[in-house]
Image (cartoon, rainbow, N blue to C red):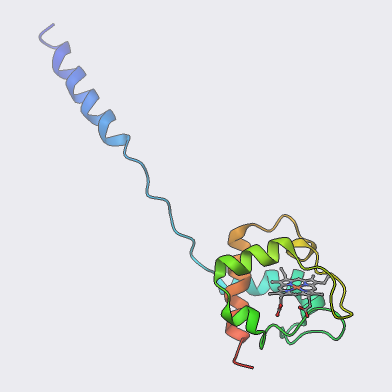
Length: 119
Ligand code: HEC
């Protein structure tokens, strides 16, 4: 008995220190990934330089909507897509790539922001 007791105390102390919750790791934006995904998914309608394609996607580099919206608002809009308007076809949700995650969209948004400027 005199040997077993201290062993239990040490084990309990070790187990206690393992149970700390890991802090949620914040998303680290990758412009490299954003560019790759933009090129694969969005460029077909918005152009490789994001300046838009006539009768398809709008110019994103001068879009006031893009410049004035928060990342959350942009993620929401891109996830939902846009109905057809002004003779343009609708934008499909996530540009048709439903497997894109919120992190993917944040990377894409960060990349587009490097191309944006005031209209
Ligand atoms: C199949 C074509 C298509 C694809 C793919 C596509 N879009 Fe669009 N997008 C559109 C159309 C059409 C509009 C509406 C045009 C307009 O607003 O003048 C639009 C509008 C937008 C707008 C709103 C612009 C504004 O000023 O209101 C944003 C932001 C946008 N797209 C981002 C994206 C992103 C990011 C991707 C890639 C994940 C993407 N789009 C993929 C066709 C597309």
